[in-house]
Amino acid sequence: MKLKEFFADLGKGIKEVFSGEAKEENLFELNGRTPFLKAIPFGIQHVLAMFTANIVPIIIVFGTLGITGEFGTSSMLGALFMAGIGTIIQLFIGARLPIVIGTSFTFVPIFITIGLRVFNNGGSGADAYYTIMTSIIIGGLFATIFSIFYKYWGKLIKPIVPAIVVLGIGLSLLSSGANQFFGGTSVLAEVYAGTNAVPYWCYILVALVTVIAAILWQLIFKGVWKNVNIIVGIAVGYIVACCIPGMVDFSGLAITEAVGSHGVIDYPHILDFTQLKFDVTSIVLTSVCFIVAIIEGIGDTTALANAGLGRNPTSRELGGTLTFDGFNSAVGAMFGALPLTTFSQNVGIVAQTKVVNRFTIFIGAAFLFLASFFPPVANFIYTIPDAVIGGTMVILFGSIAVVGMKSISELGWSDKNILITTLSLCVGFGITIATFTTGTGQLVMTTEIFNKLGLDWLGALLSNNVLNMFVLSIILSWALPDDMHISFLHKKNKEA
Image 1 (tube, helix red, strand yellow):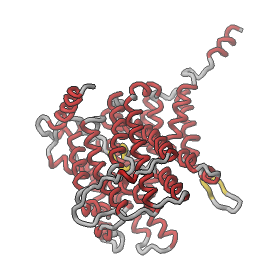
Image 2 (tube, helix red, strand yellow; image 1 turned 90 degrees about the vertical axis):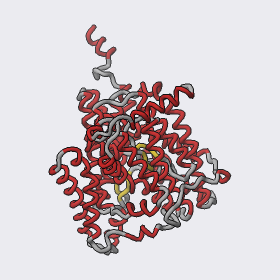
Image 3 (tube, helix red, strand yellow; image 1 turned 30 degrees about the vertical axis):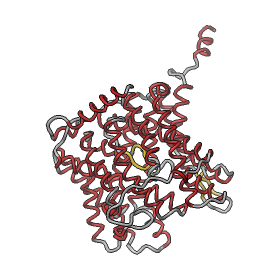
Image 4 (tube, rainbow, N blue to C red; image 1 turned 30 degrees about the horizontal axis):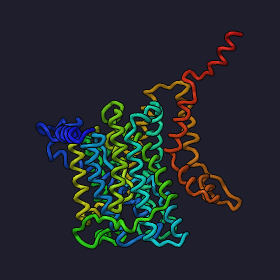
């Protein structure tokens, strides 16, 4: 595409978002403006659904590796900054669908493996940080280039495959939603150790109040306002949590060193490129993870288009999603952010509310962008307990799995589709939840066997059910005949 054509196309994409009279009914249309009093709550709803999850991968990776200080600060601010900028890029240039991007959980185990490899070779926390960022920049550029040619290799993906991937994404999120619903990892650890200061039943109560408030709001109210049930549920749950002493940790408002800033106003910091560490193994592992992220992007975009627009995404929309997910990740790493990809939480919101308006999502993206310059805003939202977020996530995550089931059903329950779905579930998803008991009575995940054998990278890949289900479904979609009969054998029998 020539430069003149590029800017003409960009202008068209922007004009479609901002042109025309602001109308309430545009909430359910891809293009056109909506009144600010409608756009703000619906846009913020998308942000609240993904805000905590946008930061958690950073906390897990850096916390596990002991990387703190300015590195943590840069990563959090960079993640917020690029979540806002990257979402705007997707809205105007990329997929031009109501996509919200955020920090991906897909890369967490691989980055921990990379960091530990650096430490084992005598490297420091700074070495691990710059090795990870280098691998993201190169891996993101690889994903960008690879995705540009989607219209060619995308033909290899038969319709059943994205449907299986959507189902896999929904299933992979169920444990996360349930975990948050019951208080979150840190609370459950305290309960198990007997060190919890707040009675455990309080967390379950708050989660129940949140989900009930969201459901009641949707049942009682009519019109477009019933679709802000997620933000209402979070607000009600948060108020109840604040009434329980010790449940809401307001210390986060002081902006901790690990994930915050040193002042009221800050800005994303660019990497010191002279410190980049090039490690071939780390780059290859990260690039493989980007392929997994591409697969998830196909599933997320397919689910979003099916749930919100009642159709499959076009080749241009899929290519735009995948290309700019890689591009945003590469640019984000230059600001210290971990890879940013299409967020499944927001696909769940679209499935629930049917709000697909790009202008509305733009308002939410603008909030994310501004939050990267005002850390106290970010930290206030971060005080929302996991139990509150979990009360809404159980609705959103479950809806993604349902969209996947619906997509498979619409393709028809032929013998071939049934077998592909069956094996993808039982083998692809099954390997990630299978366990066995050792001689000492310890319960161990099957994928941990590879860690025991020194194949940490393989264990990390096989622990991703979306990748497993994609690989199985794409192989079976081509290997199995459509009529589930081996033609030459039946021809011989017929001749005999």
